[in-house]
Length: 199
Image (cartoon, rainbow, N blue to C red; front, side, top):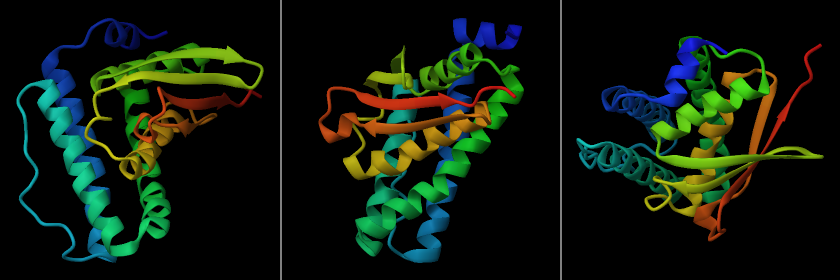
């Protein structure tokens, strides 16, 4: 395991977390804004994106901006069209964020390093999780998510594609898929993680 990954998983200063939240906010907003421009021009009322100074405020402002954009898309296109379109647009955003984190943290090919790097990314977002291993692979269980109180079920359905893409970006042989969400009134978010065996 690289020293960079080990250090980041142990401690990251607030200014670095704030910078990473801004990186995620910027790339996810850009993808959603492009969808709105293409499929629902004029649907989003501009000027409503607040910015906090503390990490909690930055996360909340990002999550509220996600919600406004997803709700505008759904109002214009309907859930049945907006959700798959949004997921398709945001998965590659997550992949790019994951690849960037992989490079900057020096993430290797092992399951342990993948989960360690995912832990770093989730800590930045105020998300706590555990991973258990069973016969069908790994199961990621989110017990606390700082974004969930600002998200609706539909927002979470779309934005979880960023997380799924990030895991594939951290390790091209890994796949993650959410099966339950806190915003569906489930007690926890649950995702399955699988990794291809190294050839």
